[in-house]
Length: 283
Length: 125
Image (tube, rainbow over all chains, first blue to last red; front, side, top):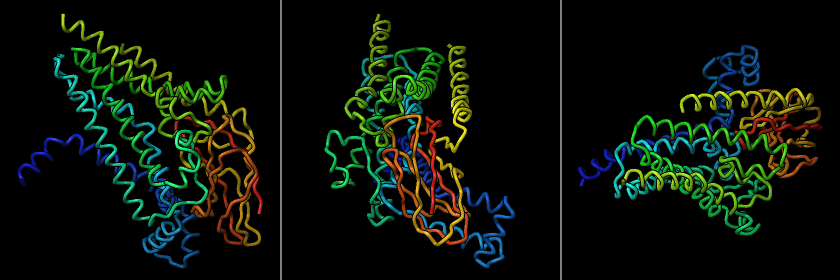
């Protein structure tokens, strides 16, 4: 039994790594949001700032004062579940194209009929790792915050489907569904698309170029283009931004179905490329 | 393909740097460059009478229909209060400040990819 567990741990190293990176980043985001890093930097680098803090606490030992100050800062934080989930997962709007790279990394072999199913399994494993990281973060935050939610935070994403009162009446369920779409569904789309692209080409260099340039570069290019388009065609341009779904809760009157459907485009493109190239492989 | 990739990357970096600058030049008044980090030094004032409310006047944004976070920081840059606004408006929110100290108003958006949001704010005790 022990050997079996050890074997499983050894075999799934990649997914465990994704899980750990995600959970680590979520907590780093919260630390960043709390201003603690900035405060420590100011305390160390700015003498006037440090002296003011020491005067305020009437403690003139460098370390003792810093610890007292940090403790004060942490206890002053807003320990609300919804606030921490929003800002703990905010950075993941730039993570999606990198999952496509992870998705492609397994497949460097020639196309076989069985391998398309393997690409789906690989994508499910990757998206499960990211979603489990979210669920663990979600659970830890509920425990730390004792389930306390803020009174002023609201979200727009999925409200057009579930109704306006859904967010306030079922806040935990809302964040589970929201997390499922952002961390499982979106991760699956990008990881599977990356896998499909890698199966479509034989040369390793071709695959590397395609996945890295097409996913990472186009993802960020579209994000910036959508921002620029907002000046000319208005708010409709947010739908062109591939990162929009990851922060959809912040856009007023967003069409949830439309934004989910638009995010299927990378998968549709990769499936099309795959089926065109598959013909070439089979001949 | 490599040339295309690198050209596109260079273009993105260029646009990424250019967009906030264009806005900073046009919007000469109180401007926050959005992003997901707090832009703290929008406006500062001295807390006069142990007030507990901070007023914010969100007048303009280069986009319509997005949420905006406002926060109040004390002179040690510790956040003492915050509010999420769903529409542009003038409002007040709770912040626990100490009389005689300096405080700062901050703002931020959740969209990392749009660093050019302009926010004008006036706030009072």
